[in-house]
Image 1 (cartoon, one colour):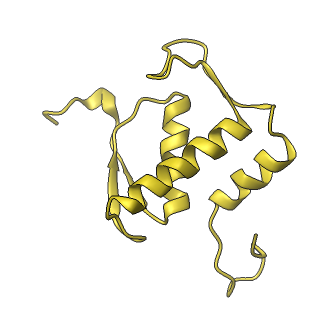
Image 2 (cartoon, rainbow, N blue to C red):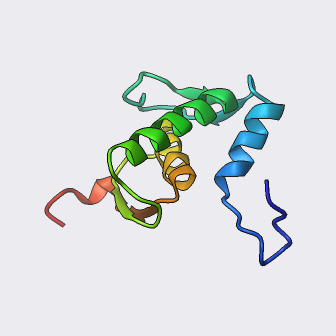
Length: 106
């Protein structure tokens, strides 16, 4: 990880996720009380979050997205939301947040 206090050093916040996964792999990173995500998880460990977000980042880049591209994110706040956000950060993509509660018409 680059030095976050050095303004000239490149820094990607997703590197902190990897650091946490290395230190606390089995600890819970995200816990929700209701509304299971699409993988039927109500909780996700740091290791799962790091692995899943790395996989997503790799797939997005393999599919032709390039660092700096903007990506619309319309995912409810659950463990998958954090996988998507950290996956985008790891790929160097820019998330454009849309509240899924607004619906598609708005």
